[in-house]
Image (cartoon, rainbow, N blue to C red; front, top):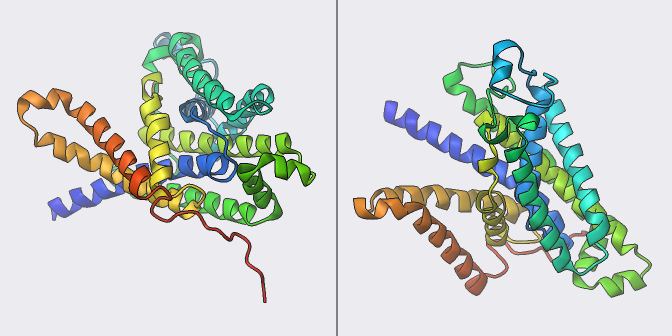
Length: 323
């Protein structure tokens, strides 16, 4: 019975993280899958969303505790306010990034987002007054924690994460099957043709960049309240950008169901590789993290060669006529 409980707890934890990564994949799918915006700075919005929600929902340290934890502000607001705040701040940052880059070739957006993501991480790492520097923030509040015993809280948080994923999925599906969504696909396929049809390319690109980044901010907030502790070392390109791209490519770029499926499949494989590396000889265990990175890289190569459209592939028809 205890073994069954441990397995259940492990699977719930896996599902929570896969659900959080599903949110990032849905945001990236709007930008890359439907609009063709090459954003490789997801880790930056991940970081901003996590820290924004943490600063909004935690109280500001006082007394002796304030000597060890330095943070700019602490509003002690509810969890939902933290999610909204994370989305708004990420949207503002994305807008500021988009102003100078979206009128240029798409590779400039990639360069800008990559550089800004690392800059954001270094700001939180070096400016101790902002959010406690490299030590980060701990003891973040968890929503609805009073409902159940702490040992079973993950079941509650899994329900919260899946609810957020479902809401975001339904909203994106509704938007992408509208005329707005068809314009995004037209821009991805041929900007010149879309412009000749009278569409404001810059405006639609900006909308996709901002909306996708806001969703990524929500994913960052969900992560922060699940782990209850964040620090700049978490938001590296590997965990914050590269693995999310692998998930989207594996599931199917341009397909929201594929984005969610890819997140669950790749995260399951990523966790599974830990068990595989645990069986390595003692002399190789020090290299286990690099072996896992290699495994994920090989997986991406296999996908690109044998299944470039992903597990589900893109839907060719997103508008269904009503007979």
